[in-house]
Image 1 (cartoon, rainbow, N blue to C red):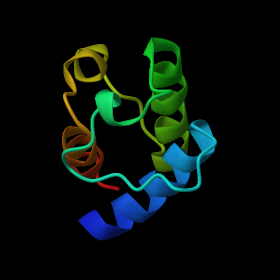
Image 2: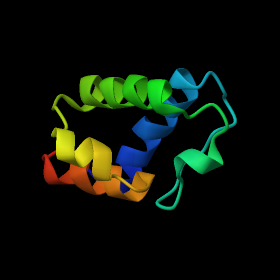
Image 3: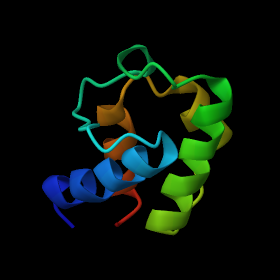
Length: 80
């Protein structure tokens, strides 16, 4: 899977979780860029990403992710 393909799938997840069809994420997207992205929605987002890509984030990964680019790196490391 290419990085662009991961982003295509992530954009759909973000749009669904945050109920906003205008969201388009990039490497530098952070929670500060999406108004509804709080700690509860972060959990919902992580669960949705895990279900979509078929793996579980490690707790250390969840708390240390600084932006969507780091999330994509982890997804790609997991062979998806």
